[in-house]
Length: 414
Ligand SMILES: *Cc1c(COP(=O)(O)O)cnc(C)c1O
Image (cartoon, rainbow, N blue to C red):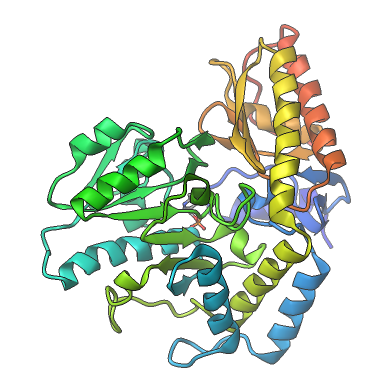
């Protein structure tokens, strides 16, 4: 095996430059620990952006993937496969939805949900009903369709993104009401905005959206790509509001690291995308489906949804202490379950602080401009959360002690 430095030289020459990864190469993982090519240990409190829900190399997930790979990996959608049918049934049962379509990522799940909404109205003879209401700061993905829903202008700039989407401020029901019209097909919402900066929905917001949709006949679409599959301490984030959406997008944590996305919907929408209108070569393949089934079983067996709630509360308490003790650097904290953000004071840039945290051996991600996001594997222990926050505290204490507000973006070896 190569060392970090050798292989990084190849990466710089050969990988497309659309990312700015940390300057080490992850080689293996176990639970919440990762090791790089030089055998340096990193505490993973980001889980590959809320993906590795059951931690790295979970023995049951590894076994199921290996066994399924040795049995059947791919069939195409010309043929049924059993793991996929069982997964559809499990997901519908857990979400109270009726139908499942499978794809390979969150972006694709939202692409499907967008096509579902527009084609539903086309199919019932209301082709003028095409406009979608989405929210400022929302993140729904990077393909052209999903990008049209994404509410951060800098992600859309320069791409000639398809139109028909109105963005309004998150949490602002009067603004939604004002944006509504007979041409609106759907409202798409994250129950908690993840990428945008870990903003939970204000009290009553999701119920208000449901009421607006019911009054106008528009659909309510929940993007649960980041919040779903137990991360907030329940299977879907939206459950806490008592609201039932018309369709749901899932991905990220669903496969525990194996790529899979899903669009779930009610029976009323079952005919919106008849044969020929949508599809995916890899979507619903037996390997990804078996992985997701294994993840769901682990969630149950290890009570990880309850754990996300209780451990998340503990993390919230630790972050609260940080905010209390370091008011020069921290503005506050927010989030739910095991999706939490530490909000830095104006003038600090989360992306510039991350490398310092990495130097201390802890992996986090940024959300929005000023938020350090914690989205650890749901199997994280209290001791690991405490270790992570202790290291973050040390980094922020150093920042507070009169150092400059932003640090160089480059990460060196520790
Ligand atoms: C990450 C994310 C997406 C995009 O998912 P990909 O798997 O990267 O395509 C969409 N919506 C939300 C809410 C997300 O957090």
